[in-house]
Image 1: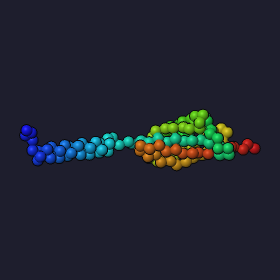
Image 2 (image 1 turned 45 degrees about the horizontal axis):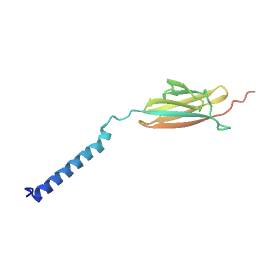
Image 3 (image 1 turned 60 degrees about the vertical axis):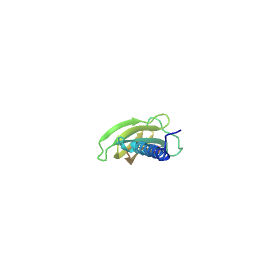
Image 4 (image 1 turned 30 degrees about the horizontal axis):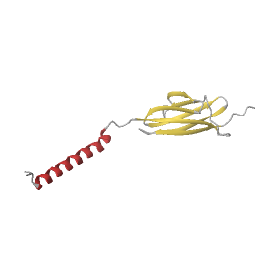
Length: 126
């Protein structure tokens, strides 16, 4: 006959369930213990204010809040310019020879991508 009591079986099942619960709790909290992102992405989408079409080859400058130049990007054929930055406040200055310039204040959040639509107005020559 079996030399295994019901109380031993209950203890084994209880121990197994406890171990599975502990492993599950550790696995679910492990994602919070990883490194915290310190930077985020900014995507500037440059468009013609009149037509809504994207503007390639626009100069996109990212400056500190004290107007120190951090980097310069050029918008691609789809009008987008992307850059990763440490979290914080910045200024975005966008210009193009055929359009007037625009300046925006932006906030970069750690671990996130912020998309800023900048509409440029055509320059009228007199």
